[in-house]
Image 1 (cartoon, rainbow, N blue to C red):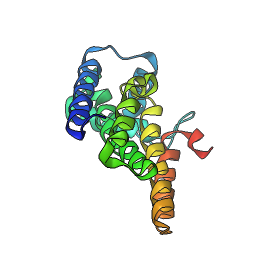
Image 2 (cartoon, rainbow, N blue to C red; image 1 turned 90 degrees about the horizontal axis):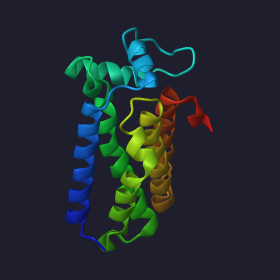
Image 3 (cartoon, helix red, strand yellow; image 1 turned 180 degrees about the vertical axis):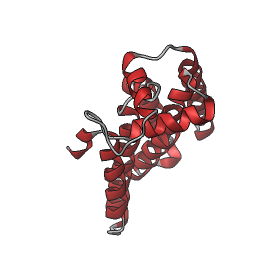
Length: 169
């Protein structure tokens, strides 16, 4: 198994590569459409909840109306998503010292879905993070037996619904 230090180094390389691609690739039609929503923030839109527009607005407020500004949130949100996967794997596998939890986080970041969806500014970006948070809360609930984790699950689920309506399922 890889050491935690090696795993973190590989995850950092993937994060930098994701950031470079976010800055260099032109916006897709969906991203441009969502960027237009971010110019007129609302509590919801005809076919999507508001989270993507809010995140794009935050990124463009910091970095301008550039591909990097539009995609900034996805690159940053890949960090907590990875943490949730790592921590969930540590709880479920019960072997943090062997490095399988870190390997789960690394494989998560190497999947095509995460590589694309945490780069592109679409509703899947925040939905992936909230889904990872929901699963982590369930793993915490199972391992601790403490019902307070249902509250964390509910918060993550609510944020998931602000991200993508299919989070309901």
